[in-house]
Image (cartoon, rainbow, N blue to C red):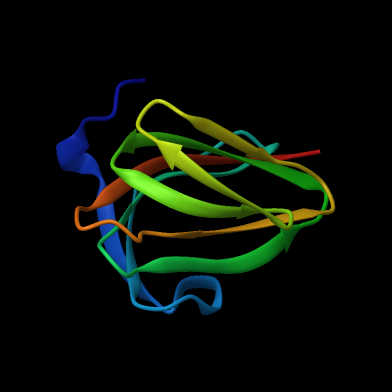
Length: 113
């Protein structure tokens, strides 16, 4: 099944997971397999953030498509740039903030354990 970018449904999520600003989140209208909770593309403009949250019985994978984000990766501060990938597994947490002067976009997948 092919889904085109034009088919993506976009929604602005203010204070996403308790973070500052708003995240522009896009997903495709498709039924996902039972073990896949989420597949989407998130854009964070300068100053926007995804608040710190912990994953239970799931793994979230972020792949940076463009820009640069500062991550709190389970208590460790890390910078992720285009082409980098971040894995957040069961009982671990993360947050992301765009401290740059350009938008940053990530592809996100959550897989249930």
